[in-house]
Length: 373
Image (tube, rainbow, N blue to C red; front, side, top):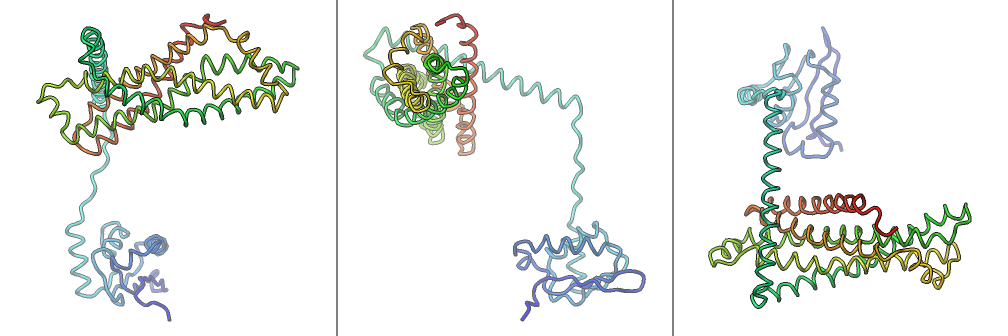
């Protein structure tokens, strides 16, 4: 037996045009069904506004159903409309309280210029705060050198473990897979020219000089950079930062310094570990695809890659670690005491850290292009 409560629309022929008759219950409870509003909307558009509308046979009409009709009619009553007194009252209330949405005003050139100026000032303020954070870190390092017994060594060791030791499995897996992929792609090209042995040179320079440090930095930025921002941001939400200020504890010395030193110490080690795993993956793939034995690979690698590449990679890794830690602390200290700001700060920290890592890597590549060759 068909459901008679479902809102329906019948289109009948009439003198002077079509006649639209409403049936069923045009209520909010009925419109909660999936796709029902879409189907009724298409039926209403097929009838048109100039038809003769008969609402008297509808079982029930509330403000939701009346609003749907009112919007379809272009917010004016049709010329031919038949309805009951109760329906008349509902329609009058909808007509009285429905307001036209303000037209979207196009932004003028002056407003666009002011918005651009606001964005530039906001960026300059953020840059000023970041430079201030870097300067405070330098002063804290001098303070630590003068009074090592006052240093936050327990925090430093804890961050070294969480940033370095716990990151080894994921960096090993990703590095190994990157080495395998790079070796297979390189082998297809070298096989065409009979230059199979040069796969050691390509993998060695690419992984040790560029991909290893940058891949490790990107993984650490997404893993540890977000964690730093979230930790400090939660301290802001729970008023722990304010409590530290009241007790005279420096945020920079107790929060920024141990995290920056931990990442600066751990990043070169993580970079070497990631590069080693990537070389292992490339060595396995070279053995499978080009019959380059691991013995030949290990003997040819020191001759193919000069020591300058390893020194450059280590220097880049230290810079990456410091920048990731400072960016994470910068966004963490800038979090407002609400959860929305915490999520936005964490996202911005990860995106900014990865962008800065790639930018700094490009600067190193241009500035030290003669090193290691």
